[in-house]
Image 1 (spheres, one colour):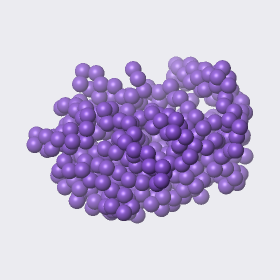
Image 2 (cartoon, one colour; image 1 turned 180 degrees about the vertical axis):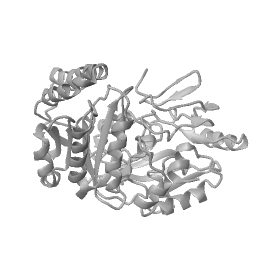
Image 3 (cartoon, helix red, strand yellow; image 1 turned 120 degrees about the vertical axis):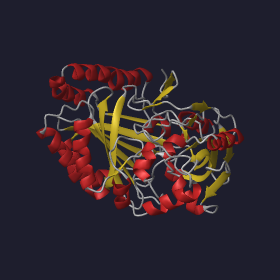
Length: 439
């Protein structure tokens, strides 16, 4: 099976294996006109419509028992505008293909998440982000959008054209229409120097503000049951290019980060009592390293161990307290957590339902390996995150509903009003959207 979601016997499953759906039919349109026709036909047949990318969301945001639109034929670059420094790309294009195509042209996005398997529309619609002091999520780099709305018409939006739609549709959750093309801001390709090194949990939390302020992109992983973290700082560099040597890269990124890690997860599942010891060994397996390469090769890395994830954005100033509470909770509980906790940041943006909307944010992501019971850990973590007005990632496990979102998103009503206007009959509704946006 590929990294994408799979469909067997008419059942669609997501990458994490925790969501399944049986659509009435699947459509793979080869053009925007065909997609618009599929939406109109669904309306005639009284069916709901959802588009699905590679299924990397852990929520049921793309699940439907109606018409499932697969965008894999809507791929490729429509246009590179070197005067405006933008690229317009079809919605089904995988981020990996976009990054590689831009690099060949001597161009790059400013920031990226930590994987690039997703489609551009799936990644932006759910608010996928990396880490950055000044540069925000992938959606924050959008300069224009084209979408097919519920009546089958094609709508374009940008800061100048339909600005109210643009404000919301950059992270539209699939609720406002089906995105068919995205225009991103780009820049000439540059080099990043990555410095990865272990640091104690106490030191990283004590000096977090300085580490954040001194680095363009700072993130770290804390290994539960230990006082250890692995930190990563990415900063622009004049060069020269000095990538991780191939063999060393394979040992560190494939053998240690994926292979040995997978074995450790299997052992941990079979004998949960061994997890704290495994965690102490894992936290020491990755040594310090520095390398310089083009952006997507530094920002992203392969993730082959399947997992389920919850991630919340808290106000950046609340990060250290929130994380310390999470550590105390894990230390005091009988929980056995074999997956590191990932911490990243993003500056405030102006997207209606962005997790960083209107506030500087820090992200805390908790994971459990696929197939292990995650509810007790995620419930304990979520209780801490929500006490700090946390906003869950739209594509990751959470239990929040419209009432909660109305309290943590000042512009929540703006989004639902726009949805009432663009999709009055709820053509793009599903159970997940009913819960998070209200009926």
